[in-house]
Image (cartoon, rainbow, N blue to C red):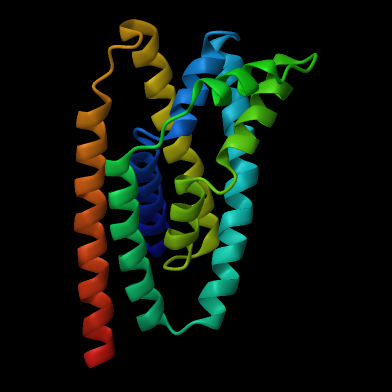
Length: 197
């Protein structure tokens, strides 16, 4: 498999997992109750592409400034933190939901894109994109992280439409956290091996 495909697959999977149980999934579900599903998905795609482009550019700067072995160790630690963050949960309060719903602009698409853009800034998936971006070339990470985010949110919107509020959020959180722990441990092992050899 080429380096491009590996980066694409890794970033898609990492961000897909990071988005599971994240507050931006709740934002996506909330927006889907007010706008057409296609409008929500298109708005989420544009907002995610913009935020994650900034994330991979930050990762490029970090990747050039920090030695690879230390960067791999830092990425491993970051993934362990993301696992703990996922277990802790990331909830949207009634006030957050109210604020998201009140930000109406004439265009439903622009409203969705703006609300999702603001919700995504500084979010776990933005930080996970930076982390993955320090390990791989920015372009496939940007594409993969956007695909992973939109896919996770599209599933959440579809499940939310079918099951409403009866989603097994805790099970999703535990599964996603476990995957972060495994990836973090593997990266820590790889970084330690690089330092020792």
